[in-house]
Image (cartoon, one colour):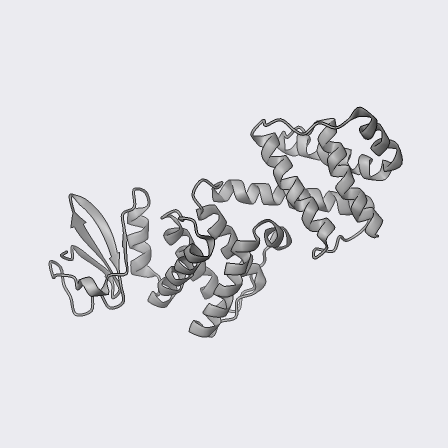
Length: 275
């Protein structure tokens, strides 16, 4: 392999079979120039990006090398923990996001994530990796990232899993769930404990319900007598579930059938019982 373009000390572009590839490794371009041979022993990663190749090259030239290294270490760790392939685009999205976040923190800015509670419950594996990244960043750069940023890292990892929703859809769905929880808390005049099993079960159920509604998949049916019992015995929970369903239809065009409203009311009733 011969160097076609040097991006930074640890990344170069080569041309192979009329295709540009990005080759990365520690010191791979040290004291090298165009057309010089690459030391194969230093190669750690080779990228062939169908989309975003120019953007990735640009990032590798302008982002601090220690930020690039951190992003790659987090991605490698995530691939090992999740045991699933991640989209090549994660090398662009996470590197760009992480570098910007670190710069803001070092300048004294605060990072906020209003979806943090939902992210913790909906994407526990990714959030756990984010916590590892938090410690890794502290060790490498002596920068303390908040849990809000851990949540952002988790979202990037989740959307990078092949066959998962893109970032926009993931954030939209998580926001919808957050708004539904806010509505329930408002109607019940309570603050639901985020660590409670009832909260976690409700979030998980809402996620599957939203997926079914978005994909027009059939919902589970409910016995009419059971449905009538819920309406009368758990009136507050059922009315709250109806208001939540009305909100989902009005704001997002999602339609929950009466049976699904009944199942959601059961989750709400568990929260009422805990109170």
